Image (tube, rainbow, N blue to C red; front, side, top):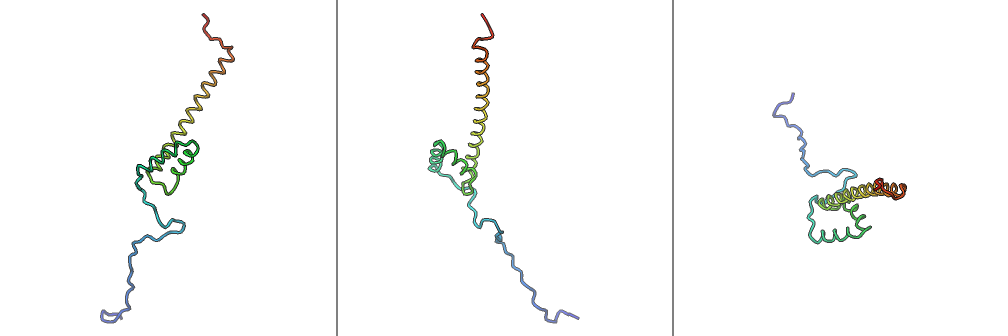
Length: 115
């Protein structure tokens, strides 16, 4: 029988580990999500996007890169969305006016209204 006066083996001491344990496949360090983008960074960003092919490629790099600040990443994605909208509208205009020109050529250049 065990009573309160009999020595007991020491109970293990458990420590709370508040530091997150790294999981396999996860990066060890994270960049701050809200880095400030300076005025000089924006000037360089707009300059690079003005270069025809380089700007288009850089929008993908900034929009989907992991080390890009959140504000620049959102701006690059929004700009790419506007590029897609512009291409779609341009194609629609080209089809519409192309069909109009083809119809005018097939009609012999005459109008439907004869005076």
